[in-house]
Figure 1 (spheres, rainbow, N blue to C red):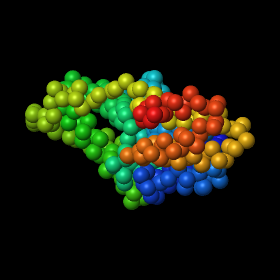
Figure 2: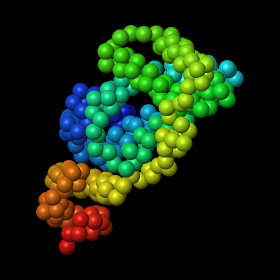
Figure 3: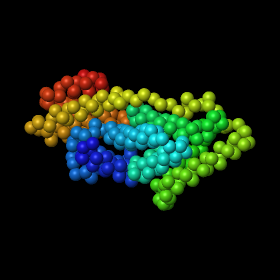
Figure 4: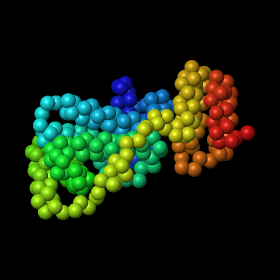
Length: 290
């Protein structure tokens, strides 16, 4: 990751945690980084694209850690304890991102971000299910989903205590404590032979690991096109003039209800830039502008 990209990500996370994703503008992030809005778009095609990059980086760190834990020749209990410890420490490391997700549940997500979040959730759930089964064996099979849900509830509640309330708890001690609570629940269920609340018929519904389309959705094609125009205008003599029109065009396309007259007007301003004529046509065709 380039140094400037990391600077933008750190700034964005700070604002997302303080103000929320929807209330943070690209201009604020650019100002905080000491760059122009045009320079921001050289690194990220949109605010959604920035969020996607952040989430994907977070997810890839999880995957690597889980794979490393899985390779270790240690008892299943230690693997689950290490996994929980990593998840807590990872969340503390990315505190601003977790706070943003906790405080703002209604982030306007494109298809790729939704799928990435689903895959992150599925990966954690599948790893936890495997660990629980490995610890308690065949006797735990009918209670697996209940145990998974209870375990997830424990983790989320204590995570809130660590991040929002900022109460200090030694993480390894916390992980061991939660696993002992899971022991108590499982052995009580086993002893009483109580029926599970959630049967394994819901397993596929609860854990869905989708294939991610890294190209995002149709709007992303247009954002890619804008990114291409911006790169081509780097050597233009009237670059600053053109960038103003391109910034307005980018904001309009990113808005929930793009206004066609404004898009048409900004494309007209860009028409003198012959090098990007093909990209301008792609945008005009998408919005059915004659």
